[in-house]
Image (cartoon, rainbow, N blue to C red):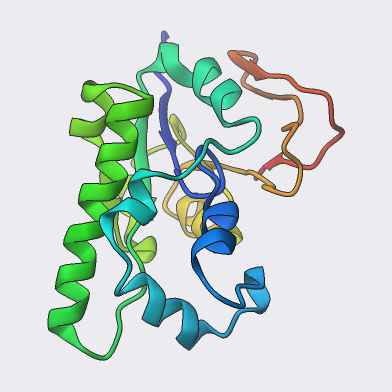
Length: 184
């Protein structure tokens, strides 16, 4: 039986460097130590350029080149909702425009058109079977993906030289570091 793997790839901190962009744009940004309310407020009011002008993540191009033969789909999250529904709708629109602009500039129009920008909790709805593979930097996304029947690869953005991993002997992503990313 010839199985066809379907790759889904997160953008922020997998392909593009969200952390660097946030450090450049957000006063007092301190990664996961930044208060959630501060991040939600910023991400619900930031311009399109915050998303569209992100730099590549170290190792991001290599990940993309390895999964490119499998016609991957970008599967990236919207910011968390704020208390103001109208503000969130505007933020959602800017995020989608910005992320698709990044994709078109760096990956091509085809990938921008097919990019899925959804709530993080909704990513798992694309895990239809074991041949659906998600590369993401968040454990909660990977856990939900696996519970729905897909296979997730947890990417550690602090290890820019993503480790070697193999999926059913079909694809190998190889770099210099030791087991910082893992298949779940």
